[in-house]
Length: 265
Image 1 (cartoon, helix red, strand yellow):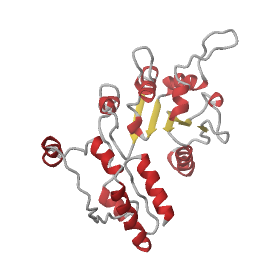
Image 2 (image 1 turned 30 degrees about the vertical axis):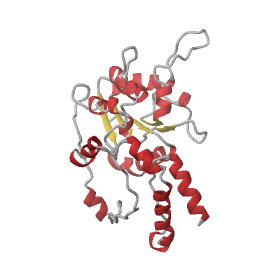
Image 3 (image 1 turned 60 degrees about the vertical axis):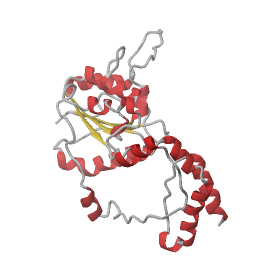
Image 4 (image 1 turned 90 degrees about the vertical axis):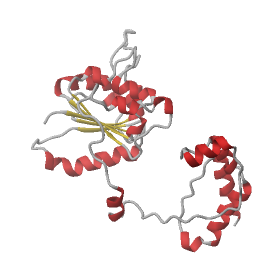
């Protein structure tokens, strides 16, 4: 429909997935003879940001590259501020309309990404340049780690700024398990025989209010060598049963400890 597409993703393999999916399916969705697709990233196998052209129909680019090429202070040969090729592409999209897809959309509240999309006090966002803007966020974790900025996620994707609000599609966990996309969880609790004493306030916080485990307790658990040895023992004694295994640890030093102990055995 001649609307430009901007696809933002964080890694090369996500760019490749997007490109391959477009390539496999786009002929079924449009009657146009040609569609110009460009993939841009810092890796030499992709196009450079300076190669972006207003004739591109679909631009698949790393979020980091887009941010660094937005509101840049690039100068021309006469020392005058000039627009980057990416900025020219967005400006041209103001005439055609733009469908913007943000993969790993839970990163949207971060300052660089947020400024790119909706701007800041002293900087314009894409929404200011393209009045006819559609924004789609894709994420498996619709939240943000920094509590102070968590509200931005819904601020960015709400009706004040864009035309659609909230979650428009959500995959059901049971359906994903049926399709063998997710594994069926088999929860097995193991006693480590390690006990930690907590005060009444923390106990209420954990048991009655069902809050997250406080950082100081996580630190204590992660550094507990006897508890870590119990984890190693569990795997070593059941290696045939578990096979290839991912161990989610809480701290980097715990990862190092587990690695050294597992290597030893």
